[in-house]
Image 1 (cartoon, rainbow, N blue to C red):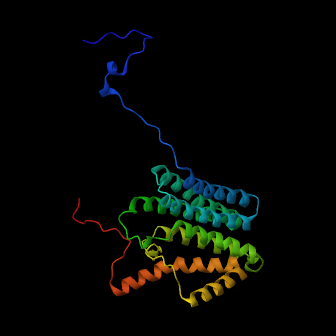
Image 2: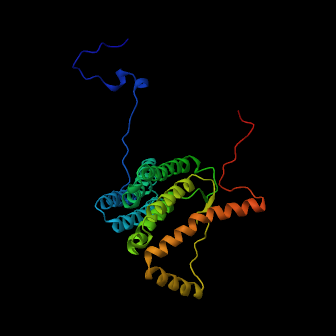
Image 3: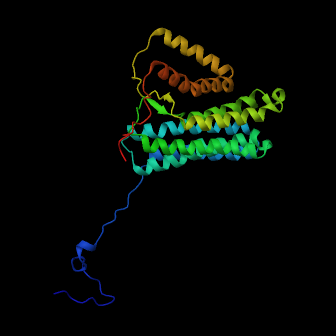
Length: 273
C-alpha cells in the first residue's frame, strides 16, 4: 500500500520508486591539458584577426604557435593522467579551427581573394580536407599503424600553408612573382587539402625510442641545422614541411614497387555484407 502524495509535501526518496530514478553526476574538466588546447584555439583566432588586418607574417607565426600548444595538450594529459572524453572532443574542435579554418582564411586573404571563385574554392578544398582528415583520424585511431599517419596530418598541412605565407611576406615574393603568386597559393592549398585525405603513409615519429645519450656528432649536426634554420626561418621551415608533404607519396611509391601493403590503410573484410 502506497501513501498518496499531497501537493507541496516533500516525499522521501524511498516512496518515489528507486527504479525510476536516474542519478546524474556532473563531471568536471581537467584544467591543465585544456589550457593548452585553449591556447591553441586562441592562437588560431588571433591568426584570423591578424590576417583580416593585413598582418600576414604575424598570422602565420600564430598558426605555428598553435601547433606548439596543440602538441603539448595531449602529452600533458598523458603525463598527468588527466585524459578525458571532453578533452578529446575539445581538442578536435580546436584543431579544426587552428589547422583547417585559420590557414584557409589566412591564405585566402593573402593571395586567393583576387582569383574570385577559384580562390575561395581552393581555400574551401583545403578546409574540407582538414575536416575530413580530423574525422577520419578520430574514427581510425585504433585500427591503423601508429608508426604512420594516414594522409598528411592537419598540423603539417597548416604549417605548409603558414610557411608559404610567411616565406612570401618575409622574402617579398609578390614583388618578383607577380601574378603567379595567387596561382601558386591555389595549387598549394589544393595539394595540401587532397594530401590530407589521401591514403599515403606519413611517418608519425611515435615509434622512435627516447634515448638518454646521443653521439657527439649529433650535437654538432644539430648546431649546424639550428644555424641554417635561424639564418632564414621562413624559408627553412617551408622547405622542411614541403619535404615532409611529399615523403608520404615517395614511401607509398616504394611500397608499391616492393609489393608491400599500405601500413595505414585499414583492412576491410570483403566477405562482409
